[in-house]
View 1 (spheres, chains in turn cyan, brown):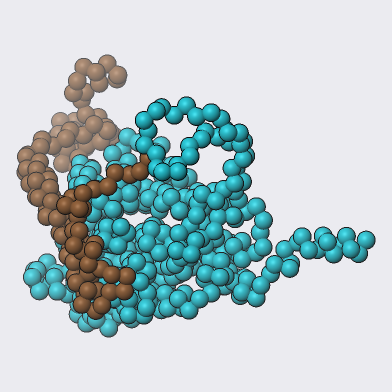
View 2 (cartoon, rainbow over the protein chains, first blue to last red):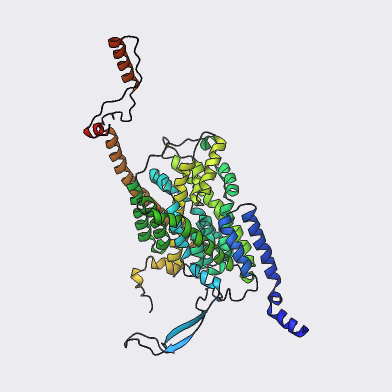
Amino acid sequence: MIESLLDFLSTTGFPLITWKMTIMWVVSGVLLWLAVARKFEPLLLVPIAFGALVANLPTRGVITAEMGADGVYESATFTVEGLVLPSHEPAGTEAGVGDVRQRIKVERVEGGLFDFISQGIKLELFPPLIFLGVGALTDFGPLIAMPRTLLLGAAAQFGLFITFMGATFMGFTAKQSASIGIIGGADGPTAIFLSNKLAPELLGAVAVAAYSYMALVPLIQPPIMRLLTTQKERRIRMQSLRKVSKLEKLLFALVVMTICILLVPDASALISMLMLGNFLRECGVTERLVKSAQNEIINILTIFLGVSVGLTMAAESFLAPATVKIISLGVVAFGCSTAAGVLAAKFMNLFTPKNPLNPLIGSAGVSAVPMAARVSHSEGQRADPNNYLLMHAMGPNVAGVIGTAVAAGYFISTLGN
Amino acid sequence: MTAPTLPMNLIPAPNLIAALPEFPTLRESLAFQTIGLIVVFIALCSIWVLLEIIGLYFRRNGNQTAATPTPAKAPSDGTADPATIILVAAAVHASLGAGHRVHAITPAASSADESGKR
């Protein structure tokens, strides 16, 4: 009887627990605490933390796909059982040397639940689909009313490239450096999309750093903003935004999509879905689709995306010196992007003294919609309680989303081949 | 089936793709960053210019609409403006005397439909 009990115990997960796993339990606990108690990006950190916990438990039948030595997920590791049927492939089809083709009637596919869910990241489906929801939720009106704020969104990408250089100096490869640099874009789906394409082995660390710093925007940005601006500059009141017509908003979606895809075709998945979501929102005749994109689609995908990212945080890959470096470089990326946005606004004011920008809105160019815009607004109100910068800051904020997607497209087109 | 590959002369910036090694030097890294920033600025500046052009058209169109004089709308909810009330009250006082007061002023029906409804 004791032997049988011992046999049973050997089939449980207890013997498979490692000390690295226990550390990851603590990491998952900290992430859950940040999300639940401190409300740091809870919609994403909760699924990520849960996924990380699952990845560091001796699960069976849940996760089967492994990451190869080259950092690429082997998504074709499913065991397929079936009957081999005679081939009806037409003669003359191209086949390589030794290529044996056979038709199989699939009867059983073995793959864990999360294995299938995380195909959404591996096949690069979730980030663009989340962008569909983001587009459906975003009002580009403030940007259309004041299009010069697009430059602030572009300037804020400076931090992204600076961090790229810093990462290469710290020993990361060019592809890994690009994945780390994109943290400065403060755009979670774009960071995941790029990391999965260029450096999937860093996906977990990059995603956690990106979302954590996005949650910390109200703590990271204000000191930099105050350091780079004078009290007088912070009190600048900006002209009211004009009203933007529906047709202008529709044209905007088409123009942005066309230009971005023509210039960086590798960003087309992100940009096209973002603009599709926005077009649906603004056209006014697809209310049901907009509601789905704004609610059901983005919510379901957020759960799957978060869990899938968490599942990449297995102790063996996450508990590495590289993770600490990535998290430190993430702060640099964020700080540089914030500073570049503020300085760009000050620079632009040299050319438009009669209609100046409040430099505080420059920091909103780092995306992190709408948190960064709220920070600009609250900092403006600290200097002048009657100054309302929120809508003005939304311009560079959404420009930052476009800028980050373009930068990601540039990285993929140059490094992804 | 294998994906079709583009000939080298059709790949955007083939030199750049080939130029950046796995571990780039400072110079290579700087060149890479500069080109990246230029690409981002070109994309967003192009959108800016096009939005300004589109905005100019819409602003001009909007101003023209605003400049066109539109006739004042007649009150249709049964209420009258203060000037009308004063005029009617004065006329009643002059013709009927101080013993009469105006309780309500109802605009006359302006169309056959409205007349029919009443």
